[in-house]
Amino acid sequence: MQAINIIKEIFIKFYEYLFQLVTINLFSFLILLLPFSLLGISSVYFVLFLSIFISAILAGPVILSGMDYINKTFNREDTSIKGFFIGIKDNFLKGLTTFLFTIVTYFVILADIYFFMQGSENFLLMVLGIMFFYILIFFSLFQLYFWPLRVMKELRFFDAVKQAFLLVMDNFLVTFLLFIFILIIIIISLYVPFIMPFFFITFLSLTSVILTRTILEKYKEQE
Image 1 (cartoon, rainbow, N blue to C red):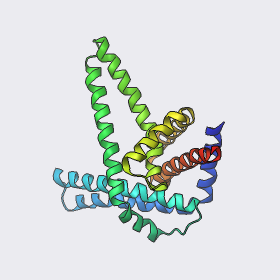
Image 2: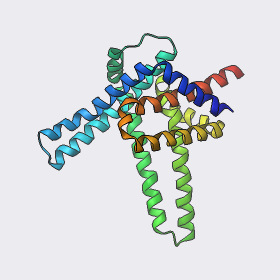
Image 3: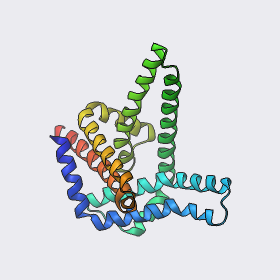
């Protein structure tokens, strides 16, 4: 099964590039946690909000730079820690728009689910709530392609949205199985939180990149 082969490749590549991936993950965590050092100056709610705000702004560029690093590694291109930091700057606007689109869409979907489930005694509202729950799952599957496409192909924002949507539709089973695999990794990470600074971000990024590369290569072979 294709999903099993992809999972095998994920572990093989993670072991092969263990040092680079752990290093990138550590730097990613340090960058995202750095704004919270402001709490050492003051513990007021404004400083906490500011720390979260700065980390949220940096999250997208950091993730995209890590994915770009992984993709370049697979392409046998030159990679370095310096290149990772440069990638954060180069991918800043792209990463910020990608992150904001993801967060805002998740917020809207979850708000709709909450609203419709509040009226669960009404059959129509309950059906709408269930429908938005399925939309939530589909949008999560969509993320597995959307983020890698932002660095792997020179696509405009809406072209990346459209292509990621079509990839999920055309490869639903393998995408869903990889999504379950990611959920298992997330649950394990929550139960063993001390491993998160070492591999969490890069392992999930590696999974998305390998899945996307595998599916895109399948289409190339069919041409």
